[in-house]
Length: 63
Image (cartoon, rainbow, N blue to C red; front, side):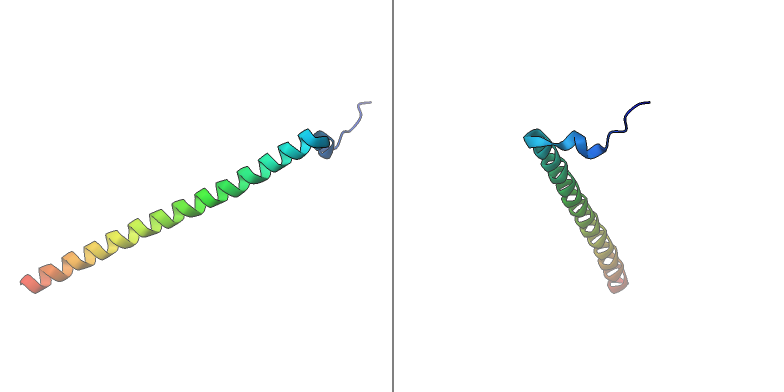
């Protein structure tokens, strides 16, 4: 019967520590990039909404 090896045995020693830190930092930076993209999209949506509102106001004032 084959021996069941836990996943933690793959991350032992200095190499395992480096791999774990690389994985952790990758996750952190992916989350930061995701939040940055959410902020950029929100900013663009707000600017688009404001430009539509200002164009509607300028049309009403000219009539």
